[in-house]
Amino acid sequence: MPPPLAQDGEAVSAADVLSPDRRVTDRLMFTGDGRIVDFLGRGTRADTPEERVRQTYARTLYYQYGYDKDVMVLGAPIYVGSEQKFADIVVYQDAAAAQRRDQGRIKLIVETKAPDEKTGHGQLVSYVSGSSAEGGAWFNGKQPPRYWRWVDGKLQDWPGIPHESETWDSIGKQTKGRLRTPHNLVETFKRCHNALYKVGIDSEDIA
Image 1 (cartoon, rainbow, N blue to C red):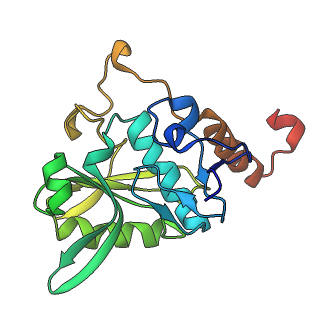
Image 2 (image 1 turned 90 degrees about the vertical axis):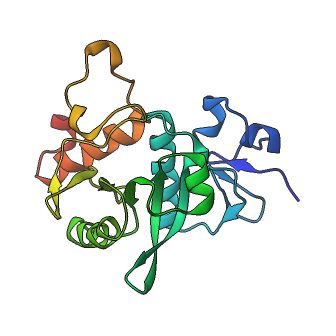
């Protein structure tokens, strides 16, 4: 099999793909036949726009929020009544819960495939209400992420999702020394640019 390729087409070794070196693994990797190398190290996935968004946000959870790869599962099953659904990204309380796909020990859920906020919110309501998750996020790769917390039987807007060592109540109350460098500033500035351009500000003014 040809070596995996980075997003810019540069060949990298299999060891590099699984390496903790963030300069390498922060880029989407592709096999020679065009499949995405899963960031969590669990094989390859079809290259679709939705999968690229999911892989991007898995990196955000790892780099920016501090969640280990072994507590994350992509496409995790969640039973809502007698119906089995599959959440895009599930963050569990610990690695053992992730291995068991234990929906009684879910910390948060991320929806990445819903095309708009309303649909994403609806998906999260069904996932969160059927599990132990305290909240979650929606992200489609084009608009800023939205965050919600499960309070009194419904999802309420929240300033963010907790970092690995945080509680939901502590969000927005961090000290300056605990702040982390934002993950993937290129994508962040791209979303800012698109949001400004959408409301009619031309390129020179944006610059």
